[in-house]
Image 1: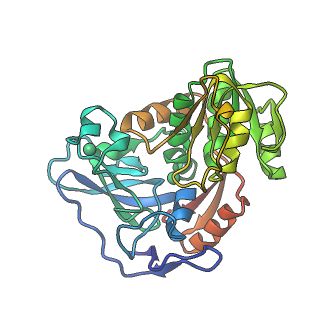
Image 2: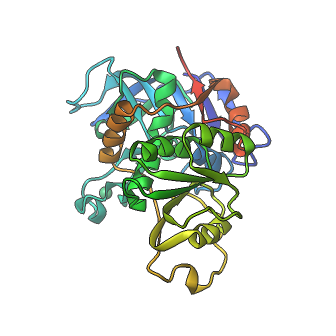
Length: 334
Ligand SMILES: [Zn+2]
Ligand SMILES: [Zn+2]
């Protein structure tokens, strides 16, 4: 099969992924499903992967964890799905169900989790494997390209909204305005929240206003009111200070990043007043199922730039420089 393979991680300015034509199609083990990939979203985590900022379990590997495709083959014991069903696969590929976290229902924190595009070869390829419990039915109203960005940016944005404890009608801050934030703002507007968007990019500001932001500015600027809750999507530690300064006492700042530069030392006063600072890690199957239903109901509109599989390196570079409007999606097969 065709795939874009990572052999040696380095700076995305050079071509980190190599196109190969002769990877073996993976065989589904018991409980696994093989999906024929149509499209795959390009995520910031893929950038952290190719640049070696995440610890990589093996090389070479194939990135990509916002996969839309159809079911092509099953391992033993798969009962939930049928051949040809259109499904999505996200970052979570497998959880053990038996570790302490799984027993508590914190499947996103499973000690033995396997992630798509890291532990299991991902969607920058013609076929991908996943556990049957981590396949998701997709709303029919969204085509293969439009559905891909829901599967990471969308679901994790939704989990971040939940963990930020924003209430309907509240004032929400979003720091950074890429794939995840441009979906989160649509959910927050649906809940009647006023949304304050902090981004340096003029194009992202214009996009945020078009999606109903009450205010746009730079993280160094003060919004016109204290915020009830905020989410930062930017992997820059210094933003945590600014975001805490803009948060009201009792408010929560959720960090939606798998990797972040160090958070500079800060005075205790930034979190005093019972402010909560928390990270958001992965998602559960329940988050994905809830978000996909909600996204279809609102409906969430994803702005997408389509790239061919062989152009993945260029898409990653554009993403690195915030030059993608909305989300980048690779067309793997028609
Ligand atoms: Zn992602
Ligand atoms: Zn587990």
